[in-house]
Image (cartoon, rainbow, N blue to C red; front, side, top):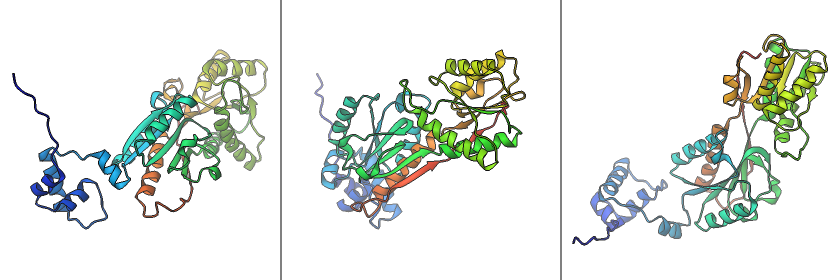
Length: 354
């Protein structure tokens, strides 16, 4: 019977000897340090030697000796398990790979107890920094465990005076998006009978959407005010589903009065609005223009196609990770960071509904 022997990992000394360099040079290369003058040829020889010998750095030992793990913790509520927002993770990973950072994910499903437990466990692994992300654009109360570690807020914000370790927040430019969609509609000739479908007050259903909706409405009202036009009629909804959109617009049409432009707070509501408008015999894009936000798959499948504003999830994730990795690579790691407040533009995808 053959005896299985335990495979040993080649040592750093063996890699250095194989590459014909000193141990310190091999260490600098394999730890990814760029603050030493090492030629490109030497760098490649060390990497090739490590590959040929099958060398694997001891990440735990390196973390203990340097205090740096080259890993970032992503704390989120639902973005990893929700198809509409998980491109944020792709953006984070792309930015992290550019600087050889690893990303660990803690998905809390919105449970505070789970959040505290996961964060405490992950921080015990010597995480360098944290991205705290939200599926929905909203204000958050950060968990106490994150008070002393560099962090950036993604798709959310908080009272930064209580969080000196926070170095920035990245959110979508909701107000600018409201302005842009209104300007486009006015260019298309929709200057009367303008309505906004979406409740901006808090609701027992949830309290996150009104924050984004209010910003979008703020941009809409700003443009109309600048043009000397009245604020839009508000068509409230109980929640933000297809059924709610249908019921609200159906009731509004039954009440009579001219409706020429309907700006919907999201695509689900717009889908419901389409059904109500079709039921009333109104031609979308001719009798009534319709525009929306989020640019989900629904927008492209509706007939006629729905003009909608895209949420820049990928760009937001990449920008958040870039800000964080740039901070970690800086020479002023002990200095109090200057808070970076970044709003990512939201592009309009024009279709036939306007």
